[in-house]
Image (cartoon, rainbow, N blue to C red; front, side):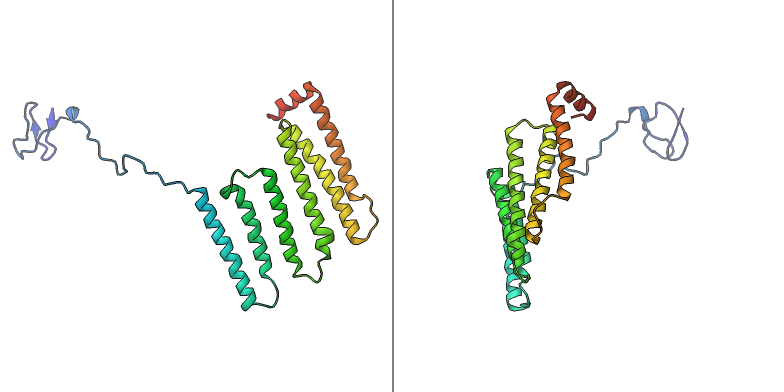
Length: 234
């Protein structure tokens, strides 16, 4: 038994419309659901990928404009001190960093690291113009940059030459950390005029030596190496 949805009068099963208000009779079982059109387009759009050369050109223009603007401000407006060298040096470092990323991606990593070291050295040299003398740059800052650049180059060479794993990477890291601390303390002693001998770096050397011996033992013992890999999930 059904009723009119408009006036509520009882309807016969054979009726197609209400005899009282003439409202069409619709059987819910025969009602087909109509799919409403989607508010979104059928085909998804795709934004064009920015080309590396365009991105490199944009970054180069921004960095160049920043460096030139600060230089002109320093030259004609705020000429009390060469403060613009800080910003120019920072722009130079950023430009050197983006070269292998967006401008010339085929540049060997050793050349990239060398350029990074040179850029940092130039930046520190620019900073020396804002100090009373540049002795700290010649005798301390520049040798430290050279030391770090050499160690990073050696670290990269080891990773490129020998099989890479967590254990070998840790071995190279702790070995170079010990060498860096030794070199840093000797450079500081030379700069300050103190006798060249190891004090705090000897502690770092001792700790790193213990870790290095443990890592070498793990690398040379297959059972220990497999056990460490299973437990550390690498």
